[in-house]
Length: 553
Image (cartoon, rainbow, N blue to C red; front, side, top):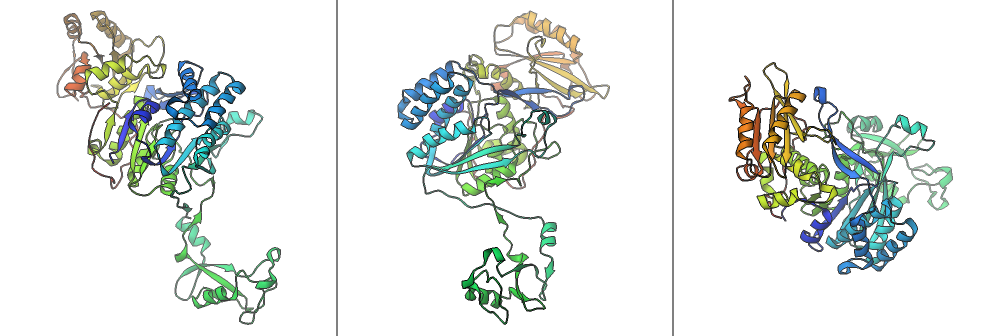
């Protein structure tokens, strides 16, 4: 199995590239229908310490995608939908009307139907959501899984926040501090190993506070029943002691504990149990998860991605519902927590995301965690590898991906180090920024601009004006089309920049073509003064097979 990272719409990727019954475990953390836009936060960078770029949109509306999706479900496109899910969506259309919530539920129904298809008969599925639409999503899941022999197993509540935000005190309701995780299986034959939580060493020593004659640490526990649980059939005398309400076990089990040296007798002859620390295996986890702390600003895991989940959450799910070598799928990859944890735990994985910001962040995270050569072990699919695929990306009319070409060009050319400019309107043509060490031992700014349409020498003059207005040292003009001779001449006339920290001078305005980025692997060759993205922690040991590098969609 080749580990794969797909850049594209997960519905298209699932339908075209993921085979039937090929996945052991799927975890989805999709948009929640929050009607908000989420932003990636960059590292603190002085004057730009509030720099951020839109990571994904969770604002839904009734549009052509919703119309097409509704038609596919009601017409049972390629026989993919159960009669229950068709009836459900038809009913919800009457109840909710063609509005944002229905558009969201249609989007999720299309994708959950594909998830069901690609799961093995022994597969498990976890859907992460919140109370915004969880009640509707439960109906969608039941109509797809339970109607075909699958099972609803748990509704897990994860306490993701432990403090109430100031604004929540004024909302005249209880604060929403929990997420919901639905757990389903495709059949009654699935792998599950109950997770266990363990106390810290300090907590254990406090709890197991006695030491026996052999130096073994233990805690003392009763072996007789309390009044509320009285059992006359378990009331018998043992070594001269008769409990008032009976023992917790029959005589044979009590004698076995005694033979094992796990009983001791108090001064009044009352037996008690020695529960040894060496036998401690932890406590079984139930469906209320309050022990996995959310990410905080000081935690080493945090990467600046708005909806990033803690690795401990994914470790629990992956360990509970998969074995080493199994295939784990995350169709809304985000910043790549699922694939990073799956890799660490020796699972194969498939990740999908529609935004290049996420793909770029995942690539950096994997390289930071598992080494610079790690990308040679996986398949990267959907990222432009030639001019034809770059042109296709540049010409996409999908509102969800309208800035994807610019983001891909910027992040690829800067090796994922550019700050993406998200400003609308009067942005002066600035698509991205990087910073480097200048002659005055202060950070200098490089402005990047990306053009996919027609270009002219006036564009270079406009960029020159932007450099002056922004106080930037240099500008880089990235173009899909080849520059004219007049453009090159205009750029050269701006002059050169020389720094004591640079081995050679650079043009104040450089023109870089997509052809050079793709064919010649041309990249920004400036030592930056800091990284705008936080690095993921290095893993001590990389697990998984050696896999091939392929950019093939």
